[in-house]
Image 1 (spheres, rainbow, N blue to C red):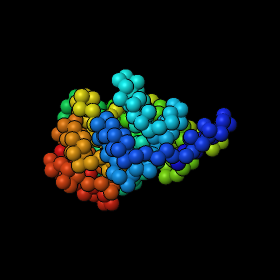
Image 2: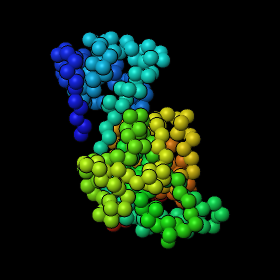
Image 3: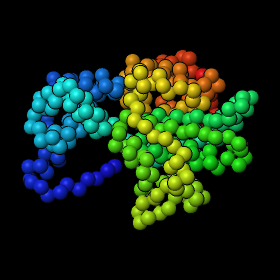
Image 4: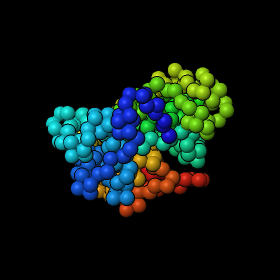
Length: 296
């Protein structure tokens, strides 16, 4: 949860930033369609208040009075596309932390990683490629980097690795690159990792440069077919707690891109509360203690 200090500009500006604007059903449908067409995220009617709240933030920033004026901006060519990016930053949720799913991470480190290495040892190009899709503020991608660095003198000796973190939210990607976190974000980090890879400064935890350099972050819309075509040849893809925001059609399209972009021997992780049942029958579930993954 983020809290913002509002400078004492004027009473009107403060009220505009705090009070959600009432949006008609017709305006709600238009805004919802803009968002869905852009990124595949679909807002049900019961999420109307949430969308009103987030749209109100953008209207206050632009000093717009009516939702109709704001919708007019979204229809305005290049200016509209730029504003839509800012709206998407507002409506996407970014809740994560380091070492979020211990069972999944244990399976990755103890079972799936050795299996992938055994297969790839047969070729001369010894490099692992891992993709954290919907990486938010970077905790998941950086957790994977720590695990790999811990294994570089044993399992990964003479290997290199590439970790890519992507998210549609440009603001949160910038935050991920900074590598500065609150105590809430690091609450699950094992003590040895916390001591080795973080420096505490007041109430902030600053990630070691070695870990920050191990991950490349970029802005990516999972619903963008042309951009997804370039995300090729990954050994592991993790897209946890992201697919729940898409409807069936968008989810099926995105998961098929993940399937295409995974190596034949690769593994795909979703959140523990998510499933590909009824979404894509080309993935095979692989069960392990406390969780599961999917193989191609």
